[in-house]
Length: 235
Ligand SMILES: [Zn+2]
Image (cartoon, rainbow, N blue to C red):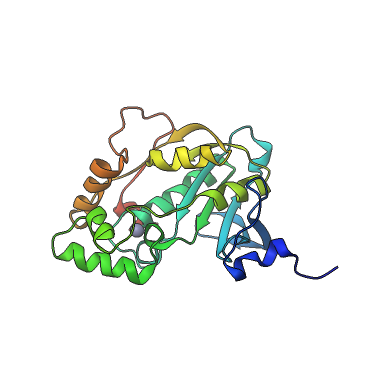
């Protein structure tokens, strides 16, 4: 048997000829990942459709729960790593990790689709346009991209690989909920991640709310995870 089957190297040719029912998630490595929030297992996946690399951070035994807490987080180098105040990604990631540990089990699916899928340098180009008055949606469109180019199929396939088909989703983004549902994951509840805006990202968050349907001011505070940039600095 050859080491690489047609199914696993199709991304090299740029042609994805896998069936919709076949998983795109290939589990590559699993390690222990102690963090300041608590102990996780970190599992590395390759997306067989395009060769991209993604991570699942698993705490406890989420597969043994009927509908575990899950965040599907898209990479934001500037927010997650540098603590950028241009967006609210860093506090959302920290809040999710913290909430999952507090709950005793859950998963952060970390998808490496920077800048809503346009890549790091294009995100910086979009920031340049934002400095000239464009908002985050207008900037992506002016650069010739769709307003949100993220794809959640790999995230759904990773969750299935982890034995999870129903989740409580930590998110403010209704689009993410419907995208995961369309890929066969049941979202039994959306748990808001409420981040208090700071002056530097207030316009960005208002644009996400107004143009992209993000829900920041939720009346339903059931299971609410609320935190601020001050919390992040303190943690
Ligand atoms: Zn961000």
